[in-house]
Length: 66
Picture 1: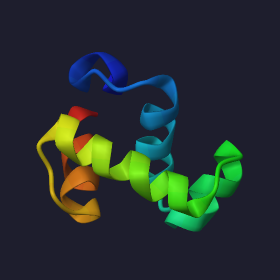
Picture 2 (picture 1 turned 120 degrees about the vertical axis):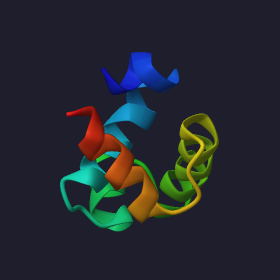
Picture 3 (picture 1 turned 30 degrees about the vertical axis):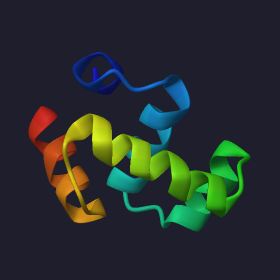
């Protein structure tokens, strides 16, 4: 649902979901087998695609989806 709603890649969607369930960026990165720096880069792309600017906004948006 997240992927279709915002045009996210599978990794971007998984990163967004991990953050929404309470993982830190470092925990999410470890789960996805990427560096924290790469996760931060992907998060910027996610913000752009979802028209959000902060992690809290993103999490609130995802919570409204369901």
